Structures are given as C-alpha cells and as structure tokens.
Amino acid sequence: MEGSLFQWIVFFAMAFLAIFCALMVVTRRNPIHSAVFLIVNFFAIAVIYLLLGSQFIAIAQVMVYAGAIMMLVVFTIMLISVEEARRVPMVRLSAGKVFGVILAILLFVELLYGLMVKALPGKVGPFTPERLQAVGPVRTVGGLLMSKYLLAFELASVVLLIGIIGAVILAKKER
Amino acid sequence: MIPPALYLALSAVIFTIGVIGVLLRRDAIVIFMCIEMMLSAVGITLIAASRYLHSMDGVIFVFLAMTVAAAEAAVGLAIFVLLHRIYKGVKVDEINLMKW
Image 1 (cartoon, chains in turn blue, orange):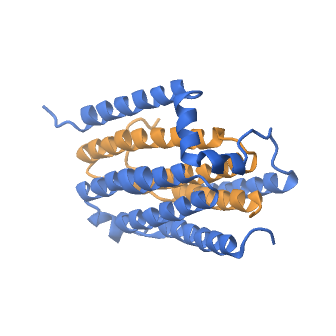
Image 2 (spheres, rainbow over the protein chains, first blue to last red; image 1 turned 180 degrees about the vertical axis):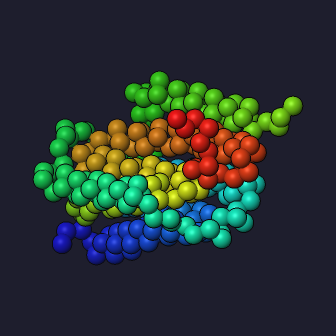
C-alpha cells in the first residue's frame, strides 16, 4: 500500500459514492431524483479530481456540470411535465434491450482487460508534481491555455457562442 | 500514490453504467443525463493519465470537453422543449418521424 491512508479512504469513499449515485441515476423512475443523484455523482468526481491534484478541473466540474448543466436539466424537467413518466413500468424487457445490456457488459470487460494487459503507455511529459507545486497547478493550466492552446481556447468560446444562439433560436415561440 | 489502474477502473465502471442507462431508459432527458455522466467519467481517465504521465494535455482536453458539454446541454435541452411541444412528451421511441 503506497500513499497515505487518508488518500485511500477518500478515494474509496468517493468511488463508491460515485458508483452508487450512477446506479441510482439509471434506476430511478422520477427524472428529478435522477438529476439530484447525478449532481452528487458530479461532486464525487470533483473530489476524485482534487485527489489527482488538478484543482482547476475540480472547480470547473462543480461550476459547469453540477452548477450550470444540471440547473438547465432540472429547469427542463420542470418545464416538461414528468407526471406520466411515473405510472408506466420503467423497463419493458425486449430482445433488443437484453442484447444491448450484453453488449455494454462486453464493453466493460474489454475496458478492464485493456487495463490489465499493459502498464500505462505514452511519453512522460515535463510537468512533474514538484514543478506543478512550485508554479501552482491552476497557474500552469492558465499559462498553457493562453500560450500553447490559445487557438483551441478561442475556438471553445466560439462553440459556446454558437450554442447560445442555437438554443435561443430553437426554443423561440412559434410565430 | 494510488495506482492509476484504480482510477481507470472507476472510470470504466461509471462509463458502463452510463451506457446501460442510455440503452435501457426511454426518457430522453434521462438519456441525456447518462451521456453527461459518461462524459465526466471519461474525464477521470484523462486526468489520471495526465497526472501519472506528468503532462498537462489531459487537463486541457477535459476543459475543452467541458465547454462542448455545456454547449451541447444548451442546444440539446432546447431540442427537448421543442420535441415536447410537438409530441407532448420526450419518450425516444415515440419520436419515429424518420423511421423507415
């Protein structure tokens, strides 16, 4: 067992919380309950990000996923009535669904197999944890976004702008 | 440090649960939520890889994927509102206008 005991405790607590909430998202009948469990799932994943030493992404996860996106989802569920969703049985078993679940489990087995065959491949980069600690992880991310990845950063803002315009045009009332 | 395989396994588990949710549920909003869950599960893989390979590329990648997810949420939920106006509900198997 390498690493401090605290890290292991936090990791397993958050991992089980995330998996439990993911199962709840899939199995709850009321979409509002699914949404609330998904918010908890996002928070657990944000803690996992913190454990991996990337504070910027953890905060962005809480603000963008748990804050903005889930607020939009909850608003949409409220806008679209969910009353009729409660009465019908949730899963009507059909051949297609059974086949789909078998494929999903196959996918999982493949993912785990790929994980076990080989150590993590790839080139080792220059950003060691000591260097990140010296500069500050968030500052490093900001510096990279403003220098090496400036084009991608600007394109992301264009994507967001087009998303906003598209949403407004789509949701506009019929004239 | 915790071995990276554990993070990748956690990511795989959450991703698979999301896949099963997409395949089993009929409510378009729940399917959308499962897709968001899969996106953030992939984020764990990228961050873990970038942490253990001493690289920042994965962090930037997750940040950009988050931007796309936000834009996707705005447009997708607007489409659900539109579908609700036409079909009075967002069950994916009732939306069969283009079915052959």
